[in-house]
Image (tube, rainbow, N blue to C red):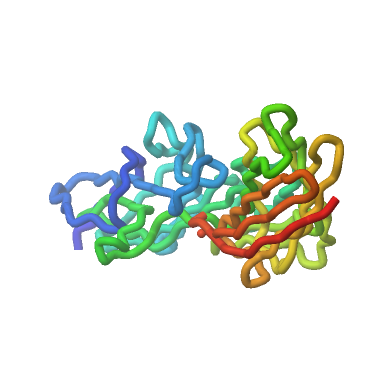
Length: 292
């Protein structure tokens, strides 16, 4: 059998399907195009669907033993950031990928405390994308609407988003809430770049997470998936602590889910609106009032 070599080089980014029917019928090296999208629509990079310039992903395939090859987002497309992968035959090859790239790969450890709420803990994973010399695009994209597979990057962590609104007897144009605390959460854990599983550290103690609110009156935090039926919430407003409880649907912060709550600050208490799960998925969790 005639042997062909083709280099894995990222030449562009597009929102396309998991496979490509366009065949390349030349006898020279064939370069594979890396197409990647992040599943689930939410606004910011640390929780959403937009690649930022210089974002790096690690790509692997098993047939030829290549693992953790870095690609970097540059001017709207992924390009090699290190070695180039060469393949030795025309058979389809299956790829997986993760974000953010780590030179060591494997088990990455992280802390989701106040100082580490950045895109670096928004662990993403994709698998199932196939390519060959005849179908050279490696498409980490979602083609389920066309009857294909979902090979896009998925969020492996959990997220909570709080939106603060002024209720009766309160005027945010004069004074806005300053900060909030989510209580008794496990903030340390690990992410396996080979499986896409994120989890809390075994035996880790739960602690509190303190966050500023800011002028936009919306705040999101990324957390490791964990069992948690209720989360205490304390909001600092006008020098007073307002306390309430967030009810977590199914008693668990699940991977890929964004649990969104509307927190209404009223003259004497907080009102917690129904929780929704967005993809990052909305979850609904009832109304709660909290007294001073």
